[in-house]
Length: 110
Picture 1 (cartoon, one colour):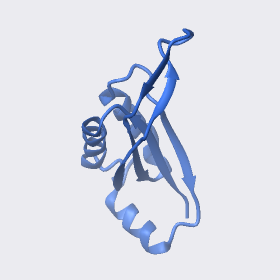
Picture 2: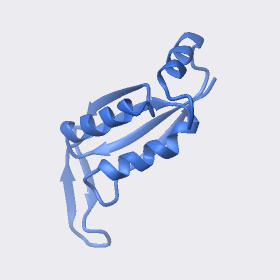
Picture 3: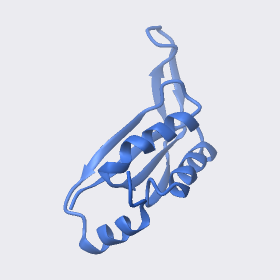
Picture 4: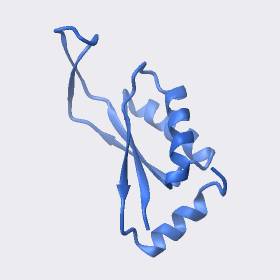
């Protein structure tokens, strides 16, 4: 049994909560976690030599593969960044009880 974990880099706890709650409300995901980042570094604006530093948070959400595309569209719509990081990880060998719970919490249709 395989599920997907969606990972989103957010600028604040409030932003992650807003996005996560919207995903939950539409039943595109079964649960979310908001994790603090200790730091992040990147060049901004792109192709420039200015190194920017930030903190932000990581939003993770558990779902099935068939819900990922709609979840990503919603994340992009609600995210404050022009180029947000959104990625997925396949989670294999999920326990039967967790998988049963997760599938029961999601929309029946994609």
